[in-house]
Image (tube, rainbow, N blue to C red; front, top):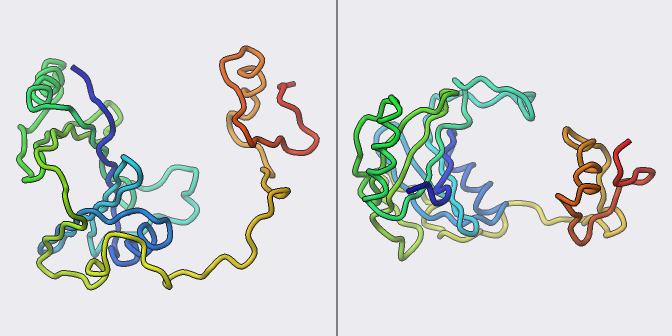
Length: 213
């Protein structure tokens, strides 16, 4: 009995239209599901075998630009919760029983229509959801919104013409990094110990070597 993979990660936005334009039309993710009712929308995007979702709350505050790479106010837009799959309803209840046996509060199993799930918090206060998908998507996007958005009617695939074309693509000889970041000093030790190796296409920044000083 264990969690099989991440089902989806959920974030918060104050504008689902700009979010669709960004993730579907700019980044090329598939818009798979769209649910909406009074005061809330819940939309899903897929890339490969992974999904992310957004709640739209009209009065949510945007994350400050200077929060990138650092702590952000959780009362603002941003992360909501992360969901994990199990393979069967028996595994769903097995995980629930294990979590409850650890003294962690679970408010029952909910039937969302497309899935069964339950929620609980990790030791850091991060909300987690465990899911048994009780349905399978056949045609995307699946939409059930009290006020359907024209942007969803455009389809699940990226729509051209909403973002500028790349005028000056990066040349192969310029495909390198400018600055190191956290963890960079460890890579030489990992390479020397044989617990990591470089992928094909890696180019070291000029004047530096793989070995850590």
